[in-house]
Image 1 (cartoon, helix red, strand yellow):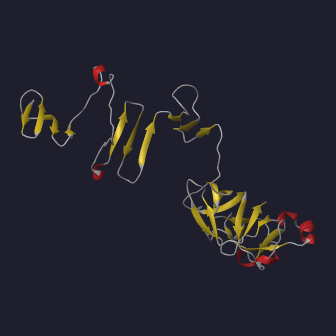
Image 2 (image 1 turned 60 degrees about the vertical axis):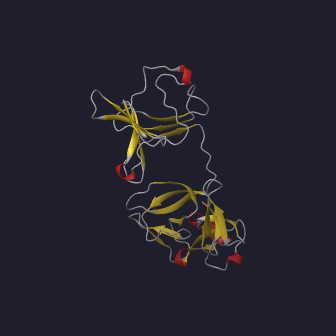
Image 3 (image 1 turned 90 degrees about the vertical axis):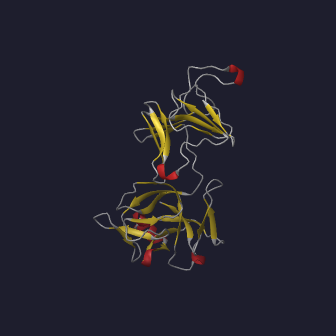
Length: 263
């Protein structure tokens, strides 16, 4: 160890390779490894194998090199400098409600499974699946051909119709080809064929030209019940729907659409 002005150096053996360097600015630079353990100094309130930090702990201050925390042979938390924080664990991650005892309330398995006692999703409205379609925008009525490809409807009472969504809270099945969210449960904002003032709560709606929905007559409901795509839920009198809840607020433009419960 040698002090030189505003620096303190700790060397291994002969003077040459610095193990640690203390500056009077309050920084300690350790260019190699720091092993904590096998030493118990209770006078400082620290037990063996403890690192105490009252501020930020920088694993790597140089963003270009990434950095990470290695957790023995069971996992690690690393920055691969690709915009993501990557986590790897042998079996997964367990999240406890209060302490490390008892059963985990959420488990993120290394096999891709997520297990939880209950999942409360109050962020958006509907549940959607991704399909291949000619459009991605929400609010349109689409029908699928025999190959499963979905296109905007061109006439009333078309079969196999669904509604595209931009208000989904959960989504599944996205691939490189399947990018369009299709509502399968809940309610969704949809464009109308007629003036929106003609629609009433509870009206059954079917497909209509240009990917819109139209009101079904009583006779059509009885003759073509399988052509019902949903029922009218609300005629909004606002231009912006404030979705996303308090944790992820996001504004969705209504654009003259109405709310329809998906059938």
